[in-house]
Image (cartoon, rainbow, N blue to C red; front, side, top):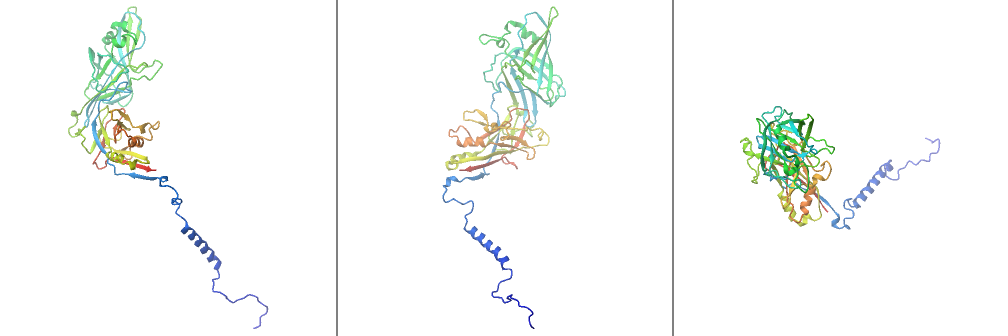
Length: 456
C-alpha cells in the first residue's frame, strides 16, 4: 500500500522506559531527598547537647512512695485572748463525748455617769448570736450564769483555753434563755435580775477610765459567762470584737432606770466596745462520755489507727507525719538544685451516713506547723493569695477528700538548716463547732502525698 503523505513521527523504541516516567520519577526523587536529610539530622532535643554543660538541663520527677502517718492528738492549751468568736454552751457527739464553751470578758462603760439617785426598773442583756447549734427550738432547760471575776485581766496579757478563773462571791444563776432558731443568726434579749444593775452602780465614783490610777476595770473586773447543760446539747457563738466605729453595738447590757422625779434613763455596759475589752475563751472536753462503741480509743499515744479525728473548740486534732522527707533532707545531692513543683496532701473523709455526712463536716480545714520551741503557725501556703486558692483545704464533694498544697512549707523545711521545722503538720479548723473523722494509715483508702520536683 502506498502512503498518501509523509509522516515524520518515529515509532521505534530506543530505551525500555514507561510512558509516564516523569509522573513517577519526581515524587520518588523528592522522597529520597527527604529521607537522606532526616538520616543526617540530629534529634531536635539533642541539638547542641555536645556543647552545653550538663547543668543547663532540668528534669521533672515525682515521688509517690513517701508514707503518710496520721495520729490523733489532744491539743495543748491554745492562746484564746481577744478572740474573734466566743462560744457558749455544750455540744455532745457520740464519737467525741461532751464539749463546753465559756468565755470571760470585761464590760465597758457606754457613757459618763449622770449623777442622780436612780431606781432600776429592769436590766436586759442583748446578744447577737452568730450561730446556734443543737436543740434551739425550745429552751430545753438552758439557762445562763454570770459571775464576777476576782482578778483583773488585761488586753496586753496572754490567756489560754484552760486558764483558771478566780471568782468573786457575786453571781447570778438560772437566767432563762429565750427561744432560739437553729442554724441562723439570732438577736436575743435576756432578762437579767435588777440586782445585777444595783451591784454594778453601787459605787459610781469608779465610773471612769485612767492609765495612772485604779479605774472601773479594777472596780468591776469583768464577768465569767457559762451556760447550763439543760436537757439537750446547745452551743451558740458571738463576737466580742466591735463591728462599728459609730457607736452601734451588738452585745451589751442596758439598765432601764428612773429618778424620783420620774425622769427615765438608759445606761449601757458594752461587751463589743470600740475600745476593746480584755477577754478570752475557755474550752472543756470530756471524752469519757462518748458512746463506748464509737469513742476514740487512741489519743496522743502515737498509735497508727485506721481513723484519725478532728474536733471543734480546741479538742483532738490530726497530726500528719512524713518521715520519708527527713531521709530526703539528709541527701545533700538530692537537695542541690531542687525546686518543688507540687507537694499535696490528700486526706480522705470517713462518713457514717448519720452524724458525719458531706453537709455536717467542716467545709474547710487548715494546716499549721510547730517550731522547735513549740510555737504553732499556719503554713505559709495558706497566705499566698487572698482567697487561699492555692492552699485549698476545701472538702471535695466529688472525691470525699481534703486537699492541701504545701509546696512553700516543704521547700522551707528542706532548706532549713536550724532544725526549727519538722516534716510534720497538724490539721485543724480555725473556728466552728463541727467535727470530722478522717481515714488514716492502713485504711482501704489511706492519705496520700503527691510530691513533684525539678532538678536544675
